[in-house]
Image (tube, rainbow, N blue to C red; front, side, top):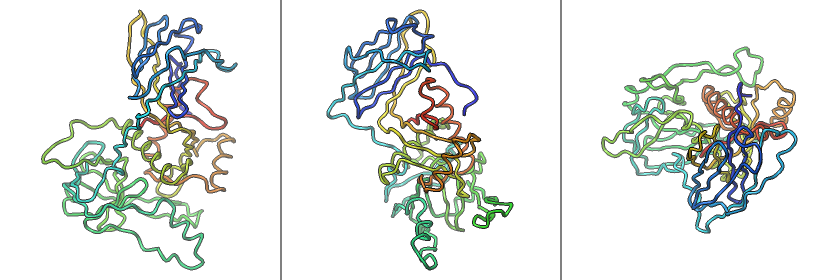
Length: 386
């Protein structure tokens, strides 16, 4: 759980598929429903309270039905919140924004440059791939072990050729070239059960690959001539001469959107909603349950005093239930044990420090939600922006 939580000012969640919405206003902003006035506009609407007026910009094709905002009970445990239900109007030609994640944009016979996400140093120059191919998903080797009564016939590693790019769930496999010596460093690092208590997961060593400029860990050397680069650690851009990226993307936002886009892609392609975020030694770190993929959210902690007007943009987001595997609570331990016994959760492997970053991002999202929305049964609730 996050160490601190914040009182709600105004919180909005819209559901495109259901064409409904929920508006929550803290009683520090308005003391009764009569103090709240909602007016609809073209792809926007405004909330007026005694503290001021707040306008929400909505995605194209999404609009609030005029006069549809009605108060609804908030429940006995939500004495500091006012709840309102909304109805939406969705244009027939309204489409979801296309994802710009690298997993969907990488194409064969295009030229790309790889940058360190931490400092935007150019790592790999003008790579042209003859083939961009997906790898088998997740724990395919474990499935082979379950189905085969003889040694794994597919034990040989799937490695890229010189002009290949192989796409895993959370990483890219590319061939190493001479230019890597100028931009990358390599260091051996132990990973696994060092105490030897678990013979199935003996201590092993990973050849970690880092950016020479800022020392950020980017991935691993899975073979002498092969780099494994995690999608959360690199920025891949089409190469246009000497064009340079203007600024370093915000780390938390980049991580949030990268993971959210990837979870949505995996959910759509594998028809699964449960994900186990794991470290490279296959140790579960976070359990994520993708609840909604059609949410549009916005949150404002405080409404300006003095009648001033402010604008907030509502953005697409995934609504997830989550639990941290390190949580000491008995209910959380039962959840983790149930997921492990029943093999629930498609594995999403990330470096340990990235798992920790992701938990901080999710905990921060949870801490900014209204009190009535922070928990669902034994899970915590968070939104990951797309």
